[in-house]
Length: 57
Image (cartoon, rainbow, N blue to C red; front, side, top):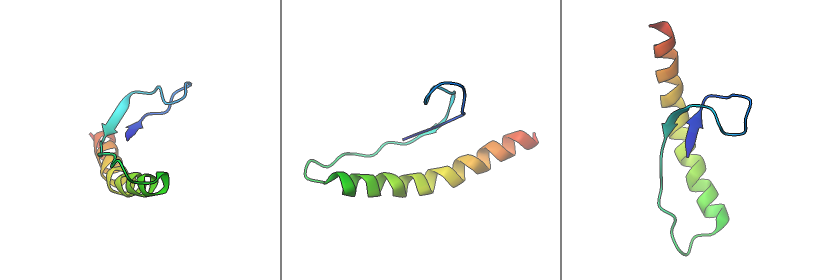
């Protein structure tokens, strides 16, 4: 999963944060999507805090 700044392209802005997870051989697309969403819910707030702190400096 990659969080990046938005630019004119599609997913081409500078990367802010990344996280990875293992794909289990027997999991469904729905199960994988749910795990990715859980990861997003953890990483987005942390990333936003970092971006906002950097903006204050």
